[in-house]
Image (cartoon, helix red, strand yellow):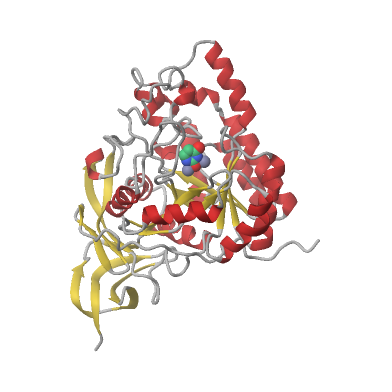
Length: 473
Ligand code: DUC
Ligand code: ZN
Ligand code: ZN
């Protein structure tokens, strides 16, 4: 009889398609058997527990340069540490193109920052902010071949936005190479217009961040991004969708047979713009883009997740410290919401919040939870079936969950590099008790037990959605 390195015994094993009570046998970092009465050098008793694929957080920002004097709160050590504590085994941060620097050089710098630091596995998307001929014609096609198979483009922000023509050019490269384009869809000019109006009227507190980017600016840009993708005949992923109108643009496109994918995030399920309304600068803790909206928008995002309009659920972890001159309270931030860095932490809290608010409250099934947090991100970004499922041959990336555990969320449980969580005090039902990356324990009962540097870089295949057939005309 085979003796496995580790056997996870007696748990309810859940994938995106099924639930089955069985043991999981792990050998050499991979899942080697599903069965009963498996024998192993180490037995992890999972009776009464759920055995789920480790989470894949396919949208996070780690150690990303953020402009004058602003520093992101997480490096690869702290970001992957928090991921592991929250049941996530793979993260996908962005490598931001630096103007006038070859993309490969910037990537080398990101790899150097991650090397030897990670507790969980890591792969990179690229952010394109200067689509030069060299980049489009030479660098991107070669990078896609090398496993950087997804690019993000921004329709807003002074330093990042591409115009429609530039987006078309990037999409065209994606069409030729089989890469997947991710879009931050907000209308730059409309936001500037609103921001200037608000500032002129003296409305500069953090809460006006939400006023400056109402749903219409997101809906319009979402529609435009979809239209540009339709023109080029390329699939597109609309990331961090916050509200019904944008969700319905995606649903409309999907119903027309377009290959349009959608992502929503933790903040759009449990925060509202009222959270930006705290005393003094407290609201800065919740400033992210798009901003959290209202209760009806939360319901729309749940609907999008339940019905498959959103196939991916991410944290959009983009952490800045609050009480810090290099973070939310930088010297200019008090003069206007415009200077509050956009982004909130959430890499560790993502899975427990979706489990608690989604599965425990009966809004989604366990299979749906696994689909949007692990299987679909893996399929979307070219990691499936190596990651995102529990199947023979897949990496043994597994989170064992206690579905009954009740606790109140506090920042100190998350161990990221920020000094707060926007989800402080949330009552949670269900918590991961053990996280395994390629068969190695990285978290046990809320304690980090993994080895820094065990997390490895993952080159990716093309997205199975992007690689499919092109229109023939
Ligand atoms: N977009 C992101 O994807 N993350 C944080 C900030 C932003 O605008
Ligand atoms: Zn974005
Ligand atoms: Zn983001």
